[in-house]
Image (cartoon, rainbow, N blue to C red; front, top):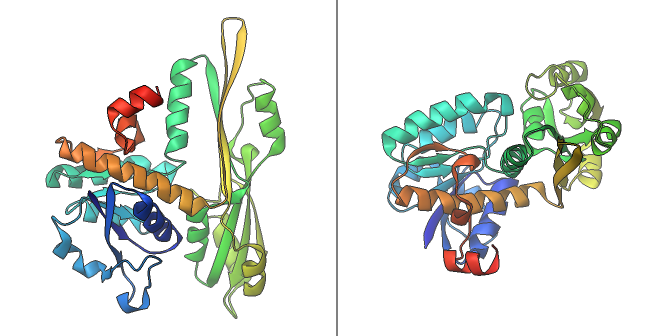
Length: 323
């Protein structure tokens, strides 16, 4: 059995709990939180511990799945916790992935552990699709569209703005851009031409809404490169109309082999972004355990993981039924 711990217990952590408990080859040893552990009640009744107790679990956990946010949590936590455990995270600030990889790689090589970073559906499964499509259709162009759906990382980034009580951020593809790609026009698109961002924000009483809107729209790596709309709404309206966490998107590669044109597409439509992301994290946690058991260490990405390591089926089954 692969022994799994969960660090952080928001929507993503709860999704990982469900995925781990559904896996026949995994055992959930506990949830670790920065909050008062007495205030955290898990869905399955799994034990809850303080993150200050993590050192007591060295040798008792095969992989820790980190379920914090990319804005402030994971840049510190992954490099810290990989010194003790194999880890998997969902760091999704694309522009900062190289520096995150470098920090985790140094710590993981020192400890002899695996630090699998940027695991999810983008970065993650979409990254694999982009690399695969580009390899088999080198004469072409990549296009990635997200949404319409709630981005957990961007919503979390808004909630970190002073004066924000709660928020949801929707990423919305620009339909004209999507249509041009599907027609094989191979357009050159800027970041702003591909997506817009819609923010629904509950401000704290007395907060400066003009400042909040300005800080959101000027936030680098999240909103500054997009046409962004900020709607201030009541907490009741947020709970009524924006309680769900749907998402999705698609990767396309438009290209040619000689005179013949081709369009490759990989798409997802998700009822629950965090639960699906949690399922991806859990599959890659299985791979992290297998890779470390084989003697590997250091930072890794989805590009480094053999597909067979993601499955709980033996290789003979995969060859007989899925090849």
